[in-house]
Length: 272
Image 1: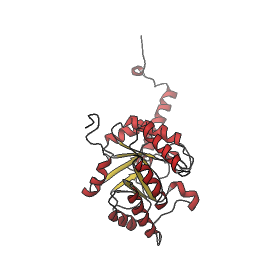
Image 2: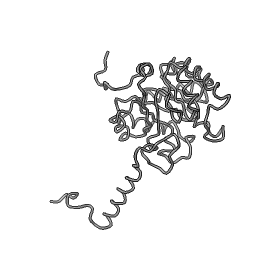
Image 3: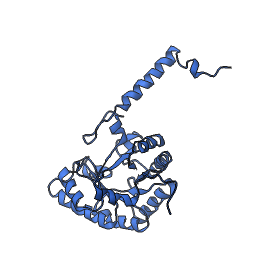
Image 4: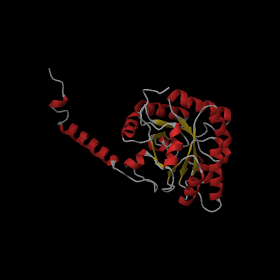
């Protein structure tokens, strides 16, 4: 039965395969709060990823490692409230799915039940394929993530480009394994573009690139990177605006007017 409350423009799970076959690019952007989610939805962003990148973009951490399930639940609830009709993906944080399949099922179930998210995302290749199969079998849609894996940076010694040399064949094999396990899409992060292109051509499910070239079926970026909030912009990102500078100017003007006594003005007061 058709849900009359669902936006006609919402990307549904079945639309991912259709978009790949039609060649229409999928557009995904991270979001961490209700106001930003509402703006992104109004701008026509297809998919809102509540990424564990919230740790670095919003919480002041130097990596994604400290982010907890409670952090992710809190931010995803906010995003869902801000964009009730958007396709929302809950990024499973570090150690929320690695300890055991049973714990992974419980946490992924919480993600959907408590936040209203449409799917979960987790990192890894062939080694997580059995878990993906179990999650999908339990009715939990899974977006996979290959290439640079932020939750593995301490194990591999930093943020490194993937797909060079023999690594290319491994990534192609990983992609096929996670597709076979039931993932409906896969993020390809900081991967040699020719390898990302090969994976995209071999998969029936869409690839969503970040730093992996233009041949992927879609793209994802961190919202603070494209808005110019923060001092660092990674190579794979582009600043489409300098919102951080605008915010600073507005805050300085506010402070200056308070000091000068010009704010609040008459129109900002409540008089008898």
